[in-house]
Amino acid sequence: MKEKKLIGWRDLAALLAGAALYGVGLHVFVTPAEIAPGGAVGLALLGSYLWGTPVGLGSLLLNVPLLLLAWFFLSRRFAALTALASAVCSLILDGVISPLLGVYGGDRLLASLYGGALVGAGMGLILRRGMSTGGTDIAGCLLQKRWPHLSIGAALLVVDGAVLALSVPVFGDLESGLMGLLCLCVQTKVIDRVVRGGQAGTMVIVVTRSGGAISEEIIRRLDRSATLLSGRGAYSGQEADVLLCTVAGRQFAPLKAIVRRLDPSAFVVVTDASRVLGCGFQPLQEQFFPYS
Image (cartoon, rainbow, N blue to C red; front, side, top):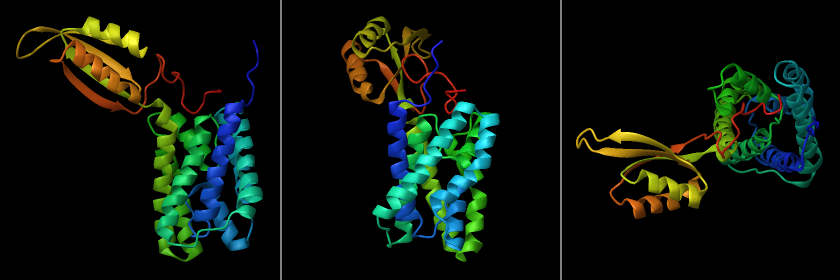
């Protein structure tokens, strides 16, 4: 069997783009605002504030024991990719972003919001490719492996609280902790949005007398399938088809047009699905351990 490459060009592109966003968020917004938004990078920021050590180097050193945990308890491939991602993020932050870009010296609230959004977007791009920036990302992945219902953003929020609490006495400012919490909340929301962006869809339930014709049009025009169930109206007692179908967000408008054209009296229920796995959507596998 042909051995799978450690990293492909799409993984590399996502890593470089994610590392750039991550570095800009940290250097331009988070560091000058004296915010420590949790994790190994938060500890590295505290170290930089106390001793002047480079943030990227400090984060890389803190990641070593966590990478060992990932090697033994998650997957060797995941650990190797995380080591690569952590090194790339540190190099881009200390070697490219910091020398070339200035820092934002304005309102700390704006710094928290924009810093959290950029860092979260960068981390989300990297996590989507089965890698991690290290730090509490690994701890979050360990928690998610133990409790799969826990989103990666929520897992990160759980494990980052201690660093936020530590930032208050280090910076000597309660507002630093409050801004760090705000930054972390924005960061985790953006991570979940980016990671789940390719897994979202629209679920449609159609009660109709033309289920067969509608399903045929869905297959022919949208390249999707559907599930047909037999139903009966509780009030009218009339037989009807109940059609279940999940489509990508951009496909809902043509689906609605199909239903309207073939059965204008149909009853339609629409709901957003945060994740859709299998049958032409994302593979049905552990979300953050595709290489184990």
